[in-house]
Length: 558
Image (cartoon, rainbow, N blue to C red; front, side, top):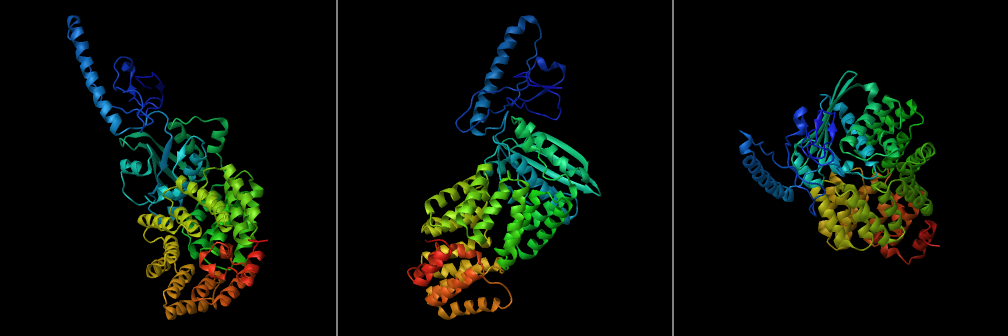
């Protein structure tokens, strides 16, 4: 048994070091009632939610009763000195005590010796993030915020400072055959002390239940106040089939890599998971997401992949109408392919009702509002999505896109520079940096940014279109036409979005050709046609009767 010398709370868990109520160092053994080993300096500062722990005073030995008063006086001096030291430490480096309100679950380390099992470590991390994130009073850093630390040897103190969390959860995964061992530790980021640790030895067949057990244990060590509904959300399993769960994690692993080959692998994993568990709603969400990625980032035929994405999203909603991810995904698909703005907005707002913390739902709704020209609300929602997940480079790059559409190009450039400081090779940020620089008339810089974006993701032709547009505006017409010829040649062997080609013709001042390609965009269901109304590079087409007719066909105008 362990005992808190301050609040007298008793603990049966011998692995705990500090009291979960007041942060005092716990004592061992029957003598715990007489000699407190930790002095607390009470009260909070404006920058801290919790008191700090300070050094242990040494007990004062008493030689005889006649010296007791001197001993007490000496002890008082020690206590006062320790309290003063505690005050200094409390002000300078506050540490968590009692209930912890925010944490980061760091990427679990794959110690299986098999890189093919990296998906298992990543998937278990992501599941724990999602489970803990369902608790209303706990702030959990997003996957994108923590996974930038993957593979880095960083100390808990620096991570805590950068992510502004008082504690982190770390994990190591070891698998030998069907035996799985998981080492979990909760670490105080101010002191780098271990607050709690545990080792879980299970069979792979117990993986689904293990995830629930870990989430429950971590929540309790954080001293989270769990209602019955909170615990139900925390421990909810979307499938009882461990093999289907592993296939889902493998699918997520490939989906997040975004390239065409990886997305194809993701589709196969999700389909196998669904074969094993036809009622697995999250697997349908993943399948819809992978199909969407193939049509957008992969630039494959939208008429082939978006209907599949919609069918999977509808099935996910049918299976679990209360899951935010299902509504957000369905809203995305309706936006990109059906061009039914009210229906898409309804789904996204429903997703935010179910999960106000959902970054995807924020960005999906902001897309719709920005496309319709509601820039103020779009940028406000995008900002909230980014603030909820500030280190998510994708979210920040998308926010910059909306700033460009609103004419706030300097802010967009500032946002994109910040993204590229985190990830200099992020193709999406370089793509929109090229777009923003074009609007500022900085064409040479735009060409450089667009080419850099293309170098890291050559399958996506939007970078080529922005580069060609910049070259045309800079008077480098021959180079612009060379890029245009490249895109037209690519169309002979694969789908190239007509919208991207129309951008180049608009830059060359050939408006009739630009409109002709936009008309093809409607026929071919090019998802980028959603930007017809808000894309500033098409502003020279406005007023042309054929262009205005296109806006009406797309339901941007009555």
